[in-house]
Length: 517
Image (cartoon, rainbow, N blue to C red; front, side):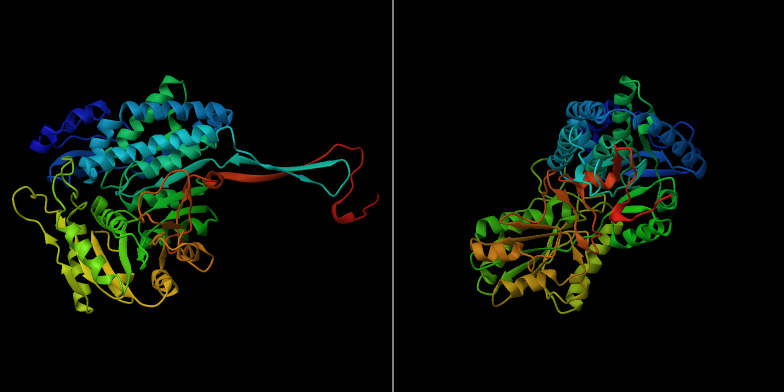
């Protein structure tokens, strides 16, 4: 047991969450029958082995699919408000276990404890949203052109929904999908990131407890563990009508092609290259807070992290100096210690990509004004801690066009009016989140107009990260076009059906066609 894990009650949290086999060499499997290989979960906080997890074999997967398919036949018959009651109970369990689950998220993934608690709160919030939604899965009625006919449309569950999630939000993104899918009458099979498997196991235990207490089949929520080869079992499976995948653009393109080849549906949440525009009318204090948290929160490992700061030339030096001063105040270290602002990257591969990005921006002509670097002194033995870096750059640099999942912020200068800044912001392949800092109403409205930001999320006087569950979350272009969470995102988890009822004794045809016998 590591000192950090002991001091911050990590192993007590694991036991509360139902994960009891935590000794080195042990196996905490997704099910009792798994015969797959093991993957080890190491904490980026201190490099310690937390546990080893059994991976899912093809044979295991077939058993999981059988369990899920059988559960769907029962679950879909429950009225939506009854399904909502189950989700309400699941949300209450999360309230009870918010602290231990938040600690596990922080220790296994490396984000700050406050962000870990915030992620569990997102799970609770989407459960609350879904409970209300369970009484609002409405369709439409239409007037028929034929006398004595009624037309309407309704929504039915799809079946088995496959979920592939990323390490950076190891529990919340699953909940965004699952809570809505459950409300809609679907059952779910989830492959969490192989970098954070224990978070997935903990969530599965919580859900299974609720199902057992209500005499419901366990297959309503299923878990499979492993690398991309396990995900491929879902993407190629015609029994899964919808695959929701969160991750890199490269991964998303592979998933989209595999699912499209069988004419299935994909919900893709992929990379972001998010920018904040800072105009001459910006509030500097608000700009600094939004930009710094957006760039260094979760060590720059959010899909909504701020990558680019596009600053008007008249404000450039003032904003640059304020941002650099703020970076000098950042405390880097154990994310479970709430005095620290920045925790580790997920693993040493992420550190390698961080180093490559810093070298490439210099090679392309950029200027590092906060140099960054890997922390190697005592207290950073995991090798995953880096200093947030800032570089002056141009939008056309190849490295700036690329999403580096690390705390690297690029400062880009613009001149002229806000249209020039918007053109720079839109001049990347990704289209997830965007923001403008301005007190000028015309600039704000132009940014939000049809010829403004081309992103799925566009904010005024707040940063690029920190989306609320009430709005649909997702982005355009190579971000994938998917929408999760709030608004009418629930419709992707259902199939639409148009119904026409003839309550006469005759059979008139549409468009006035005559067919007499």
